Image (cartoon, rainbow, N blue to C red):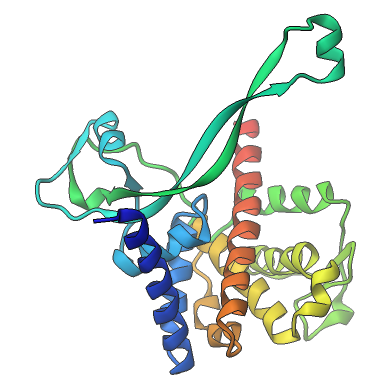
Length: 279
């Protein structure tokens, strides 16, 4: 069996199923997918889709050998979750001019993506063995994450201010400036700020003219959903009408999911780096 083709078919079928569900008015399928994205934000949107369609309740996945390294083993008879892994090659790359002056024989190894291959991971529920270290999560309170998010906004040279006159809006993105409604509860301020930062990153570029307001709002809300759930916040964005993201075009759906994943992953990675630096 050609596993490369099999996994590609799974991707195609999964996207088709998601699109069909949205066409039929079932936004729960996308909400389930975004929940998976929140748990696996470092995975590509394609692999998140594969995990969501094969094992939507997965919480922590790793390869067979990786689980052995954690002191756990995959139970006999468990079916793996097919995902795509990058194939890279190494080639000699010329060192920069300064390095050449220091040592003409200096060269560095660079990895180059040449394709993808099928591989299999397993959820922790499919394994037995030692308990994994528990990671702290925030439940209902963004705590230090809110301050880190404000710092992240500033690092992008975006001015953050508060103004009651924007009511009933909770937040406004103006391109280089985000204004929030004062005195929002911490969790609501965090979610709103992620939403507006997503607009700044996704919709203040040339791409703005390629999207509708509906797509822009839904993408920003989806990023907020992923980021909030990833840090343990319980928000009511799960009830948002994600069906609008589809907009009758599978290509638009694919593009939006990729933008959502990359933006959410970038924000979460920045928050994680800041958290480690503060530790």
